[in-house]
Length: 229
Image (cartoon, rainbow, N blue to C red; front, side):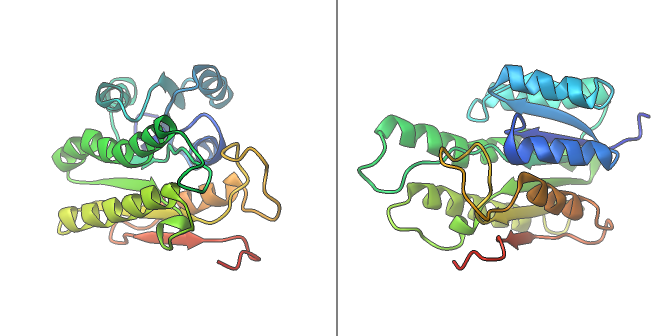
């Protein structure tokens, strides 16, 4: 069915991205899956079926890769309805705790990445007069955490989302920030207890996507029920 909507997801090989891909296909979407882990991407593509999914190895900090993701959506499925800028990298807290090289990778992924995702998809959305940009921020993007440069990158994502919302206001392009608290994903070396599951966040993404055309859900802030901050 060529009228099935298309969702592009970065960071799609595991965690929130992979869960969102599964929920999106169940909701009737076709998906373009982008991530650096080619093997996991193609396993997910096979799981979802090639009529519903296409995998493209990509680095969100690479402008050419971001353009390729959008071009693949249009070439393979003939349309692009939404893009989910989800890829992210974490870091240990403490301004002496990580290497400068790791910081640079995190900033490129967490800040430049979403900006490039927007830049790649926005011309298509403007041309067709509609579209939906979703971005994974965090509770850490609403309150500073001691020694956390990661928190600063998520503050940047929150600002990027609001800046885009203001830029496209007056059009039918939607912008949604997804802001989860602790989530049990491969993002952590030591898996947290009592955390949200990737499926919980994926359902929030589908909720935002499923709203009527005149409704733009700008922010979804969600925490595990026992998370205090």
